[in-house]
Image (cartoon, rainbow, N blue to C red):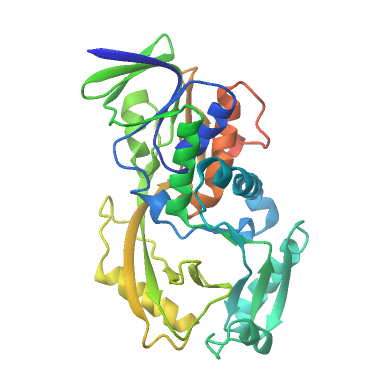
Length: 374
């Protein structure tokens, strides 16, 4: 049986795994990334790509750990936006554009104004409530039944598949090996993971990072530690419209729509807790179209160009799982970002890379430890 040795082995080539490899390789470490599927073939490649740390609903104190992680993710995305296209030669359409979250009744108005209060205190964002007239001036095709909207500047989006390709190119230029291999087990000796098994070989390493998205539940069997991750299916439509141009990301409840640089309206999404079924379905199409046509009028002649589906990793309590794995001294976990994988991914990766290099993380990650499930 062949064997190869690396300083760092990363299992999972989504946004978290590739970003972690990027940070570690920039520090001069020898890194290999393993994935059973092709690059960008799952959630990291089929996501919406919105970057809005302010998207957390609730009291600032209760959301603080996730908000800090979201802010870190945004910080790293800003760094990526200047470094990754230059290194990779790939433009993944990072851009600032405003967001408009619609309000249709008094109850939603009360909630919106409560959210605006704390969001206005966050640096680098402009947040205000605008009336119907102002909202329609920004996006004329909005549903005229709205009573107003939360308007936000300072938020961004990317084209996720191109971002994943750009990260892949960047990693390879930094010396990272990215291999299409499925691991079948982890060998542990004296609380140290020493190698992973594939169908034909063992790969040896000094430290192991597991960021396997919705397949992270396999870690439970390999490490004997409860890692309660399950897939949450989401479906997105991309439509071509000659008459509707959305110059802001329009949101209502958990749904959204925006015209991307490819000229198509991207709209989503569903939240389906149905296991590992990842095919687009009529239910998904109809659900997204219903929410889209509630937010936006004038799409009667729009052409459906793409209909995609993907599985996001969701933990038992909905929070990220991040940090060292218990009972081992050299294994680190990074998963469970749910619908916020593209936003949180680089932040999760930076923290993971720091832990691997025995550095202090930039934020407190105690709330994300997998030990909360023990």
